Length: 475
Image (cartoon, rainbow, N blue to C red; front, top):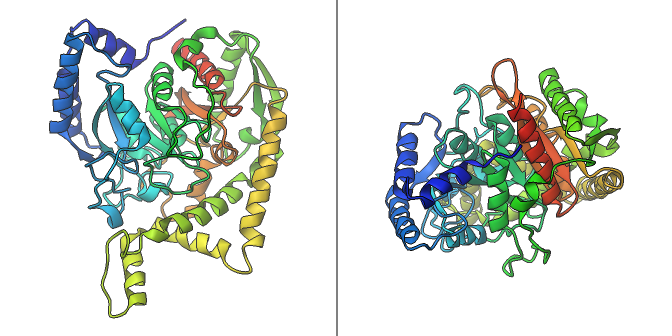
């Protein structure tokens, strides 16, 4: 069974001129105007409509790009030249980006239309979308629940058909977890597959930009466009970028899928575990070989992740001091100005993580915390390397629960951090991982299944995700 993505069907209508880009953009703008979700921080209707008319003229001339007419939202920590990049923070509420991020340049070059900048957890620090200076985003499936974070607005906008697709950033699960909560496909590429140039850094050794879409085919297409070496980002790798779309329908006959025991234990919700296991049985029916396995160091991943990411954040966000960048609160002396500016400019969650980061890097604690976390990170990577000697992909739940209620976890940071328990291991090891819908719970809330692959094995990850998509479509 094959299934075209949302954009594939739309593109067919655009090229036959049964629908115009202008009509598509206008429809999206009407949905945003009427939406209760608060998925966007800013929208540029005039620019989007002008670009839509340009794309309609290009179609009339027979000049068509790979993404012509694809209407996108861009997470507000990714630069679009001349637009505000606020990172959903008071500190940057008036900051205007002076250049395009590399991924944005590639999207525009292939005909995409950017509609606006999407809401997010402040500086990408959060798992619910509630730490935004501009207010929380709501889940389209239930307005009283969170859409996940930190790419909350990108996920909610795609799920509510306010845009066709969106870009998010994933540090510890910030594309995959909201994809799970909103019933979308969300991909974190291999670290080094996609350029981070123009992405405001949270944790530089972990951050990656990835697509959020309503289908695996659209995800593969977007990845094909944004992937590749970038001389402006030294962490990108010179590896070939295959045509991910052509690989999708090769099937999974004989593909070996690992089911790690550690991911199917508490705190996993029973309905989530059953949905993933039911889908694994359907993948076996398609010819996959599912085998039990162990990733014993998984239990240390959350601790290692939060030591690592807070340490890197404390370094990266040092520049937002009210002097070089950010909002300045003038006091009678220099020290007072620094303290007031940073206290006033950052929200509670960002301040908490910066304090943690400064602590784990401080004299007398560096070896006990940060150095130990890096040792755990290396051992976890060895765990995965051993696993991939016997399996092609690893299949897990994306999150231990479905979307939780707004304000349910804001006063309990540890419980909030555990929302990422299944996504941070792949992040720490720089592995490609995708979340794809695999059903709904008894309340009608989406459940996500995660597929983790070897470094730069996005083609295999997408093939398995496509098989999941097909299996769920037949339920």
